[in-house]
Length: 361
Image 1 (spheres, one colour):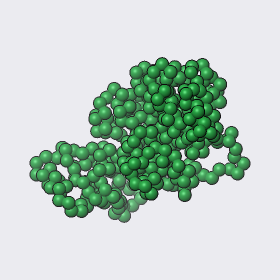
Image 2 (cartoon, helix red, strand yellow):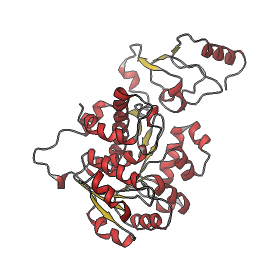
Image 3 (cartoon, one colour):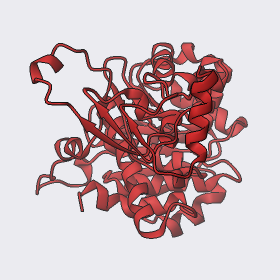
């Protein structure tokens, strides 16, 4: 932790009101985790050298780095080849590789079938947003299983989605058989209805995207009991803390370590949301440095779960569906911020922008 005269100097810099250029890394910022070590320089821009430090791209770093520039100082490529890579940043080139143009002969049956289960009483909007995001991400056939009370709203909002009002888990049966991917959690609630739906879904072998209250219920039931390879978990730091039975503050101190612990405990692929969202399948680690503070509002996670489910159903590898979903979600938010600003952004704004960022427009 920064102490003494060094801390006084940093604090004086931050009070000066003058433009600040950080060389390599803002003093006081941890290069490995992005945590502030007591006090850190708030730079307008940072020029980093040799390698991009992972701590510049996540957690508290986003409030201290400013505009980030990189210079390799003409280091030979063979030197880089000797150094293990900590993480990969998802980029536009990844989108172009993973989402090429569709075959002209494509039809709805070849573009994936997604089932979304959620929307208990008072939370119907979450499931609707997930379903609409799934549609805008290009899934071929989408089914929404929600409370009967929400069917009229779904028919008005998203008539393209096959909406079923269900009161018991037994009514899920015919829908489970046809789903390539199931998204469970948006607005699911933690009451009897949500518990029954989740228990039935966890008993299947279907690929699952698990979000929101589905994560909270699994925490209560024992996550290791349900560990599986064919699921994608999308916790925010609070949910991640409950999954690991750890304080959120401890988890945030080292998000890279936290996501490794999550993946070992849960299996499959894990997304740790937040500034500089992380994705890992236990093999490679991916970081998304896109997005903005306008995303700090309700419903954003519901939209993300729908995007990931749609990509997975369209044939992307599990980890690629997760990391590309995070990237497209963040890029849609950045596109919205460009034309209306960050403050006042809502989750449904991203849904409209999704086709543009997916198609590279």
